[in-house]
Length: 293
Image (tube, rainbow, N blue to C red; front, side):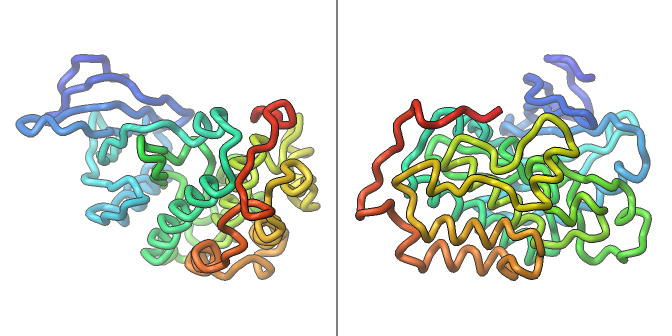
């Protein structure tokens, strides 16, 4: 791991930001601009995972979107592939959720931003496959920024390739679509829409849509579509929100919206998805909501 104050390949390490099971992310600067950047280095030495990181990063490089964290460069440091991206000064969505409950209208505003980012990524051929609260940053204006497509899928990869086949359970179980449990080759953009439904459910209720003490219990809940409707957990949630979630969280991909663009159109054009019941946007009492596990 790099240390605070290290200078490597022209980058000055300011501080570590996050360490995961396969990679570590640092805040860095690069003279002469001293612009704040994020450097993600994969320390897992599996060549297929490293190639996936390079491929997804190259697909993003130079692509600017207000709801995606922009990838500026792909580097290699001490034999490890790395991704340099813009630094977003914000909180992970998981912390934003823990600060709730938030007004329904605010949740739907954040959901629209995430849907815009997903639509742009999907139209560029990128599927995230690991969309969860930790993969979304909320800045001071409460604007969401989707980041870290490291486990993503570039849709022009041949279905039978080793990159597509590797890893049976890409992603995080509580946010994975049923087909994702069955293998990486079965996943397309609609898996991200399932994850988006999980995020909206959690943003509204401060509870995960699907959870349990073991992988098998979680998978069974996901496969059965077994969750408590948000309208039962918060009395101010419009029925239209639950109807949208029922579509996003459908167990069969064909029963979900066809694209993130379609979801965005629903969120932007359906007046019933703007405010809570009765025209207001009151909050459910805090004691009625459990914090996320």
